[in-house]
Image 1 (cartoon, rainbow, N blue to C red):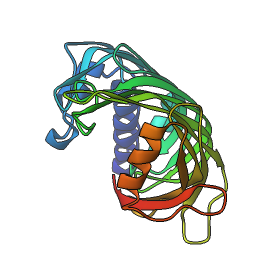
Image 2 (cartoon, one colour):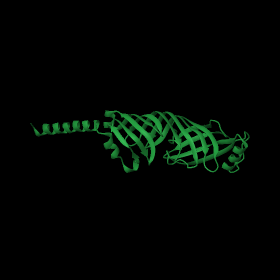
Image 3 (cartoon, rainbow, N blue to C red):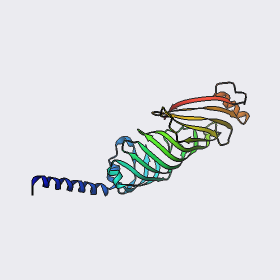
Image 4 (tube, rainbow, N blue to C red):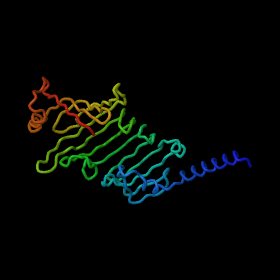
Length: 250
């Protein structure tokens, strides 16, 4: 047999061997080798990298629940994550995904329900509690940051806890799925009842900024007193609403 033909057979054999190895690679092998910065751990791992489960998942030391996933084999070999992911526990969420390894792509049919609580979300304020509900038809991500969102997010039963407990209401943001020229994603904000009447916009700006602005009014005397504190005494407009604006990063 000529050397060239032998070399081709060896290369072909290695490619087939590699494909079979990846196709049946245990999920535990992959999870154990995740970068340290990911801070994702599993109490138990089963299945393969294509159809697997991570039981007792924790992120940044906080419990998430049990995660399962189904990914396309050929897509994964081409460098894309295409399939669906489901999490059940402290965090309840599912999504269809089509993502690159670099963190760009789309999530579709995203649903999520989880508490705004430092025991689940480490970045959550220690003196506030709420429930976050997401129902997104489409979420476009570039370089691991949202660029276009179609669907809605709700912040339900927001309240202050501690020495001065206070009910703060429920709110909703609707996104139309359009990406602005600067790469911003803009959603309309409104209240769903509670002590404050609020309308406005939420703007997500690259790479990780946000701007919330609109008008607010109190439905009770106590709420209106808080509005005066929040807006530093800014006068209301002719409709009785006071403009507000704040920004930050996530």
